[in-house]
Image: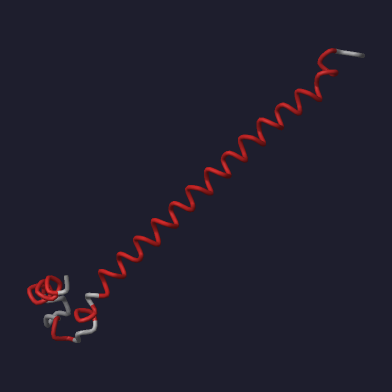
Length: 86
């Protein structure tokens, strides 16, 4: 039962395992790079949002003087506050 396919089976198996391992490692490196890029973008966006909303402290913590009787914001006053905070 010395068949040619049985003699070459270990080398075929090794080749397929090598291709699979190469694909998996390349995918892992690519995914790691994308995760790092996303983390950097998230940190940058978070910093920008924090910088923007730090100027709105007077609007957020200003009390009820910026609210209408139904609880909605009075946008005319808020627009002035937002423009002056730039």
